[in-house]
Length: 436
Image (tube, rainbow, N blue to C red; front, side):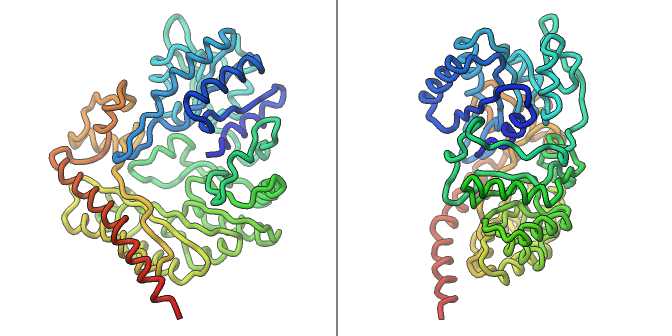
């Protein structure tokens, strides 16, 4: 993923020389060599280490990214011992105090969005406690300077993507799904499992459609035609999404993009408008296929809304769509059957224009309704460590019924079988039925 958040920070640090080094572009051994060489060449006074993800959140494909953080921090300190090391990123902001306590190499940590706090902090490195939104060390313990308001997103400049900061060509894949643009920050939805409202607030902070289109034009100038909107949800509120699409159409920009959409706000008119503006892929995360499941997850939609979205996608041209679902504890046989058969049903009912992108289990995270519910139901111990010491403990941090663990394994196998064996057959059938 293109490190958009770091580019925003590089843009606001106007009185500093900034260089972004994305270690994900190399293998671990290569990354260590590149990092050491860059630190020796650049001789930075301050190094920021962004923690984007803690783990994969995929029960069937668990990997603990957090285990890579401390070895990297130690390498930085060994190579450039005089540099101040600052932690940040969304992963850090989920577990800020615990990460500071567990990794003593971090001198400071910036909490949540840092476009305001980081420039101020760099001006007051001798008194970090006076800067709101900062974790720091005081008398041998971790202290927090206090919460601060999130930045006014509309006033932030277009993030830098020039070669002095980062080489964007390394991210130019053919599908364009890993170069992002934000038209807004925040999420006003109330999905039971999601920590977006904690990370970016539950009040929407929107940019003017003209600003968004300016940024898209800037990408075209860099040779980028394909990108994704990385808003938590692109079409909430719908009028803003429509305005962005209209501005892209007005400027006749030759681009292709994707975004995550909320089901209820996805009308036929919006889909057509987005398609004309360049949207080729519509992502949906209803997460449940029944009214009971949708209600339990706080999605604010019904089965009827879901079926209507299938019709809208089927009747649209030149687009594709994908849907994600969860398996929840306490699901009836009917609910499990209906969820699994979406793998077949969605391609059929949309004439091959949509598919199930994933079926998984909810990774329990702090500051979510699912966390409180799992503790109350006894499926998660009250003192369970959500940032475990060992990789093996991650498997116990998913929202599922441990008494039926073997059944869950069978369900996962059935999904893989349907997805790999039956879905291609349905795809061929749909293609033949569309042939003249």
